[in-house]
Each structure stands twice: as C-alpha cells, then as structure tokens.
Length: 241
Image 1 (spheres, rainbow, N blue to C red):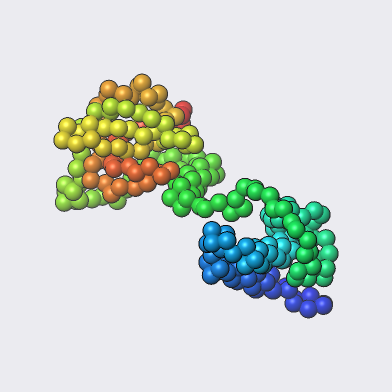
Image 2: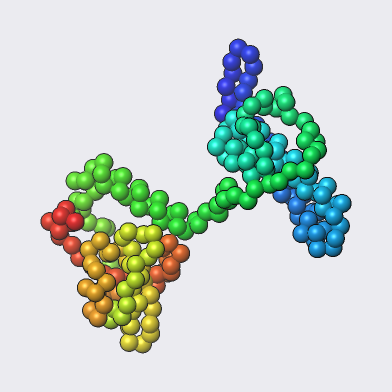
C-alpha cells in the first residue's frame, strides 16, 4: 500500500517486508550460532554475546513493529525485561548496544501460535455458511433446489452400508460435531458428523445408520472422518432447528 502525501511517500507494505526479512535473518542467526550447544559446552563468553545480539534484535523488532502492531510490540518489550513503551521515542532514540547492563527476560505466552490449517478451514467454512444463511435464509434453505442429474454409472460408484453406532463422543471446542465409532461388520471405523445439536450421545449409541463408505477421508478439528452419515430433513424441521 502506497500513500503519496505532501511530504513524501509511505510504502507500508515494503516497510513490513523489510522488517520481516530482518526478523527472518535473526531466526537464521539462532540456527547458525546454536546457543543451546554453547551453554552445554560451557562457552559462556560466546553464549553471552549471542544472547545479547538476539536480545538487541528483538528490541529493535519491537520498536519497528510498534506502529503496526502496538499490542504485540508491547508484549515483546515486556518479555525482554524492559519498561516504558516501544513507541516512546521510536527509531530516533534507538541504538545498538545502548543498554549494556545485565537484563532479566520474562517468560511469556507465544506471540504467534502455529495455525492448525485444517481447523482454520473448517471454522472458516462454518462461518461462511452461517453468514450466507443469515443474509438470505429463504434462498439458502431452498428445498425446491436440486443438484444436477447423475447417471446410473455415477450412482453405482457410491458404497452405502449399514453401521452400528458403538460410541459417540463430542469433538472438543466444536459445538456441532460428534465423533462416531462405528461397527460395519467387516471393520471398525470413525466418522465425524455435525449432528450434535440434534441428538444426545445416548440417542445414537446402539442404533444403526446408513453410511457412505467410499467417501475420501477428511479431517475436522484434527479428527479424521472415514465416511459420511446419511440423514434426512424436511423444510419444517430445518427451520425449527
């Protein structure tokens, strides 16, 4: 994003790219110096220099990040054992090695937790469906709409089997998902189904259901589903629920 004003140009995207290059180089420095080995081998002088360099790099990162992510920069600042605010003074007051006294860093929460991509996709899909349904319920739940016709060859590819529901468990942090442990007679398998809001576990355990068995496996909230439960609904019950 570029903004051209009376006093010059502000290339915010370029600034962030440069900042992240610096942070990536700092990460590479950790791999190159292997501070965990320095401590194990007793090379304290070298270890001190490496840790001080990393500390200075993080201090500079906090200062440069502050205009874009002030809360994150402040968390970095506090974990580095610093007081005040990284926004105070900005780059003008910063210099490498300015603080040569001993410092005590603080252990804190992970700044950028690793994203579970499959979980993110499932949550995003659920949010998108909910938004479309709220925006236009009549169109979204139109039971008069039908999918394109298929031939007998397409239908013959689908493998339907009767399965006994042996156990039902709720998927953690998922309001609508159940994990169903099934007995197909010739094998046991697990599927994930979004019927939690309609049934209690005891309503399903011991019952027989129809399962599409040759559906490609998919993951929901980190749980692999090997098939799909077949269910039916009417316009009245769907609107009711």
